[in-house]
Length: 157
Image 1: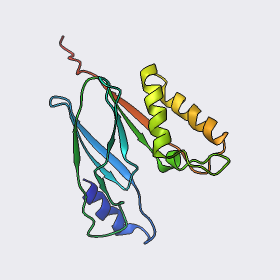
Image 2: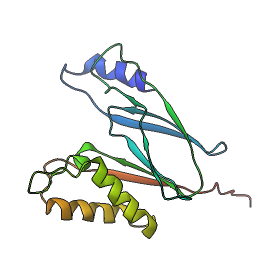
Image 3: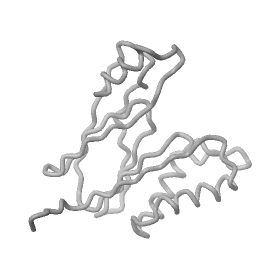
Image 4: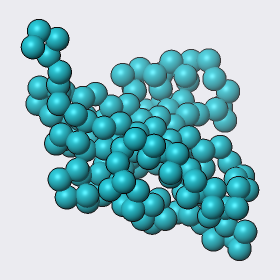
């Protein structure tokens, strides 16, 4: 799918136009997530059972820039309660007034401290930490999405 999107974008875009994206397909029966991260920052998976943070680090290049780009899939096993966090690079590249970056370590630390407080409101709490770090001076756009993998509900049960 990502390869087709790359070809599509190359068909009409200007040379300097490209996009980053994360595509994930969840197999709820097998409890797996197969993903392709095309130039996107590595997603973070928080393990509910241990509160450990994993980086989904199988990476590929951007879409819409090169004809012969090869895209790789990653696969990860899921457990009930695991949380996936997707974010744009504006999150990790946010700077404090002294010029220091929030960075991947700052995001990981924030996730590790906020995850035990529960899934509800986690994005608001992460954004509040980012606002406090930058004193509400963001230079780039910030977007975050979180998903929690719960059990499959049966409609006939």
